[in-house]
Amino acid sequence: MNGLLVRCSLVAAALMATFSMAPRCAAQDAPSGAQKPTPRAPDGRPDLSGFYNLVDIYKGDPVEEKPGQHVVVKSADGSVFFDYGGSNQGDGGARIRQTQNGKVNLLDRTCASCENPPYKPEYMAKAKAIGDAMNGDASPFDPQYDCKPYGIPRGSLRGGGDYAMQIVQNAQAIAFLYEDRPGPYFRIIYMDGRPHPEDLDKSYFGHSVGHWEGDTLVVDVTGLNDETWLGSGTVGPKLAMMHSDQLHVVERWTRTGDVLTWEATVEDPVMFTKPWVMTPRQTQIAAADDYIRPTMCVPLDKGHIVKADETLYSSSKSAAESAAPLSPAAPAKIAGNWSVQVFSTTEGVLNEQWSIKQEADKVTGTVKNKKGELPLEARMDGSSLIGTITDGDKKYEVHGTVVKNDFDGTIKMGKNEFRLSAKRSQ
Image (cartoon, rainbow, N blue to C red; front, side):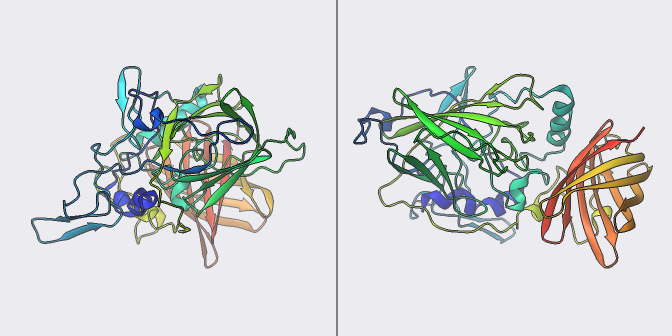
């Protein structure tokens, strides 16, 4: 099934650190699907209903196989690589090519000419620190490798790498059903004129209300949490990463024939200097027999992400003994006292004091919290810290990025992973 192709190949792609799927840009040539009549709903509005994906975007399959079904590669040493997801990533089958600033971007490929978010300097520094440590498009800090939902706008047109999604429409509401991590998910766009709730709880997909402007569906999205990335990784541009929980997204959906065009303007008063106008993307009506399959995400990819020197970010060793630095760049200076906040979804905001010592890339310290003092052991990899906090027989994994007097990252406690933010104490 075409809608599953890229997601099925993610494990193999992570092993090779060749994630290069990304958004596309303004249309270069009108796709054939755009020449068809645009269907209309009973109220005269464009009918967005249908199942959409990018059909078959692969090339190089054996001729006796169905295109995009899978590929078998036999190496000289006799080993066999079997990618049942069809990860032979070529451009031969791409149906819709788009261009921006004179550069053509292929479907689900790194959008080199797309504009990065207009971060304030301090947040751009953090995004660049993470981006510089990436091998290709892969980063262990990317929440998708923990099977977290993509959120909005990253997941607006996502779905299975092939932008696989079903739209169901009536006059009161429009439902978007997606096939992607952490499993099939949905959004409801309310069309009955209701406002956003005043006491809205933050969530991955927020709250959406919509209206029509001519033949374009305009969707206003608020109430988004800060646990997602804006893009990057498998949905570029590269530095579209962190955002605050003040994110506000306005989407514009336009159907022309069988082709659906998505545009968005993103505002973040905390992290942006101005609104971010995202590069438009498109998808199209899928084959008549294609459909969403309820497959769940299991976070197997993260442990296989490798650095440029072919070593793993994580290994059977403790996080404090993990692989050698990605580059010869000097480790960031983290020694000192830090005021830390852990944003737990079960206990609220937890305040801690970290006292850290540093010798080159080796980091040790103590963590003071309501349980007492716990030892910290870690290693600096450029601006990235990877370490563990020991609490009796429990070990909590810590990942984060240091930029001057700020430290942002995550702490994994059992099956839960929480965001943490810290500032160096004076």
